[in-house]
Length: 108
Image (cartoon, rainbow, N blue to C red; front, side):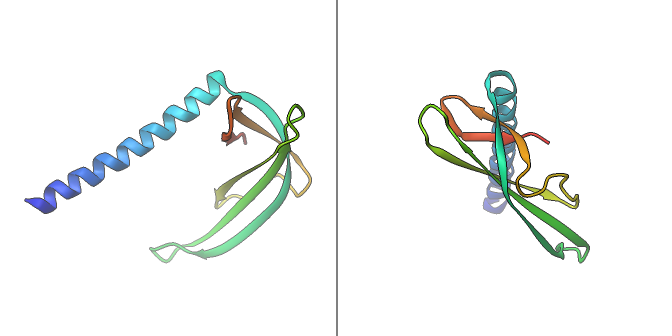
């Protein structure tokens, strides 16, 4: 019985986290500010999934300096099984929360 309750709690936690992420993305789509960042690095990792299938992950890092404050922000995301169309030095759109630039989503 306890295992069933723990499993149900874990499922509810995961669903809550996914729902929160979706809420943040929607909020940014309506209230966010688009800025342009510069891709500073693209790292590729090749490996196998837990099922033994080949996969490639790309980790993209971009930087932006706020012109008002001079503060530099770093953004990153990962893309699975798809080579990004960006290269190092490319300009990439980033949607940020104007009040908290650490809350962002990279637009592809």
